[in-house]
Image (cartoon, rainbow, N blue to C red; front, top):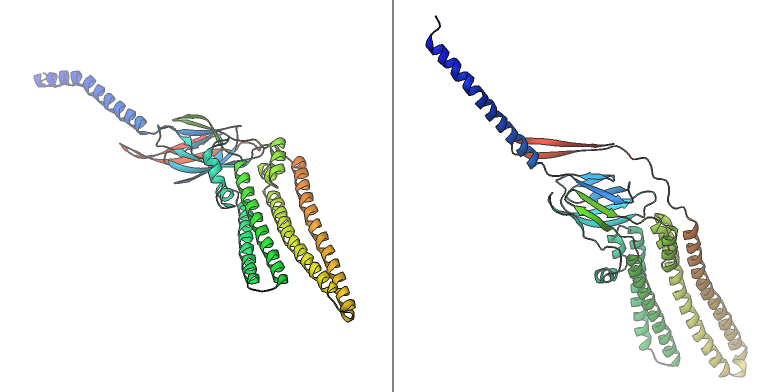
Length: 364
């Protein structure tokens, strides 16, 4: 005969089993929902046009092709470089808040703004350097520094000439003063070139922003965009068309030619002063000195003609370099075919209430 306590225990087990199962189900569901809630949403970066190569640098580095998933740990300010065949290489800065917030573009958007104009007037080369165009930045910075050093040097020569006496010394002092002013004007021209070069650079635009989606507008490399930029600034169109070496070469050639003109013009002024005083000495020469001073007068005239020819050569050379640079912008290759989209994978560490884990993202 089965004891009574056996039947009591059996009945209790049958009654409590559904309750325990339900409790365990609720507990498991709560843990699952907590884990899902703790996992931050995935932020994906898109570009218009699509399929661009993106490099991000901030508290971490990330490289891939859009659409590109951004790990949740990448937050704060990030420098973004967008490039690829058919795209104009563009750099900007975006801010990524903790997941759930709205990301946005920090750098200047396309169009004219007061901030853009003011930043363009930084020391020559600095705006280009910060925009990721180091080659043009170094060239413009070197041009401005060289102009400043030459202006200081010629100003010292001018001050020394003022300590001398006589009409010839006064004329020589004027030559040094004009030379100093020419270098000052050249430096101002380089400064203006740097500002305009920064104003016309390609910039990122914000097309769409949600907690899970950031869409950036990126300029396409176009023939018209390259031509009008090269018309304004030598090599700017080549930079827009992603021909960076050509861009720096054209800009360097024009700056060197312009500096050569400044030096050649100074030689013209000095030779003109020499010719003036050779004529004065010839007019005041005694009969025995006439032949010698006539020879010096003729030599001064020939030297002046040579100096003028050299100056004219620099003028024509600068114009020719600018013209050939414009032709190059008209014929250089653009819109190369985009390569096939590669596979992208990422592994992101996660810290959840019920323990550590990882999130694996695969895109084909």
